[in-house]
Image (cartoon, rainbow, N blue to C red):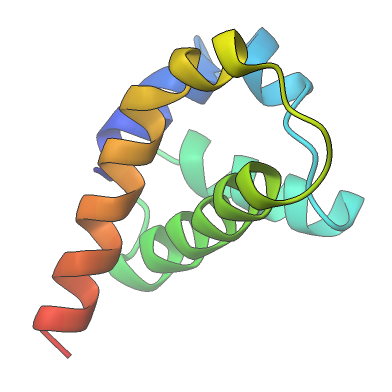
Length: 93
């Protein structure tokens, strides 16, 4: 799951357009997550932190604010991946 988001948000060490428009609560969190995603060998703790921040934003963006239904379908794979992560996290407490 980490690799899915790394491939989605980092190309050649640079943030992709989807990452540039991904709104986190603060610039520090966005910077930290990008740092974890762009590392050659992030630790498991860094992977966990990045995925939890991404999960929070994806789920928050889904349930708050106005939505264009066709735009939600574009997020289908993102939600599948992050929900698999959350289910595995809960099951393997």
